[in-house]
Image (cartoon, rainbow, N blue to C red; front, top):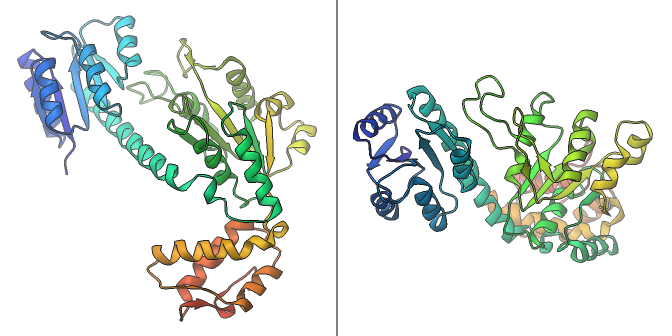
Length: 389
């Protein structure tokens, strides 16, 4: 299905010209000559993007923007203006516009702006759906187990979830730090706000500044529009830095200043953006050793670790192997369309004697594979491939 656009412009020649340009790009385009008629059209259907002039007969484009976003906060909008005043652009952006275009409108520019806005809208929709799923699936009930070690973690999360204190999660790979971070967020007063995970080791060093802080128009090659960074996207919610020890010393310094000032400056910009963010960070390595070796800043660690929670390895909570295995069997049997009802005692005994270097993640992978190859409806010892077997 083609993407649907609505152009709101009282200058008929310009409106028809933009319509033709965007139709040639494969979009379905409707037009409106006033904000009032645009809002009527908007109420009758869904649009992937609305492009509106600011100066319109009757109510202005800014007022239309406000009215639309009251009804549908996630609606993507782009503003056109014949007045290249920073105040007008800033007002539009503050009221939720994705970007603005200064007239006279260049065809190549508007095509690029539309492309970027639709891409951002798709990401927002994906994040919204993910948040709704996580609200259901990432509460404390998803932390499986009844061992003293995991019950202690659950108790700690309950105590600190509804505060604004930064949290540091320490634990080996596969112990569930990401799950714990989501449980903290979705048990907090920020649960209806964004949860933005940042995998520090997965972002290229030369791009991490742009990814985190965003950029202004023209700040880097090919940047025809401004781009919102992950920290701004997380505003009023939670950002989860996974693999915090992978950050360079320069980025550590930048983030320390952000946490102190609660403000970011997009790359190439000189106007700060105030932030209200809770930071949750996680590391698998030895933070104290990294600090001792000068690879990690003590001041930054002090900032991110107002509260510290240690996730236990699976070998220290082996009584949780049975409930975890049963949980994964129920989950993946449905997803893989297999009718697996459980696991026998001999197979459980083998799981209980293993040392679990990969922790809960490794158990999940072993159970998922066993579901695929099991010939009956019960997993047995012959279905398990553990370690180097």
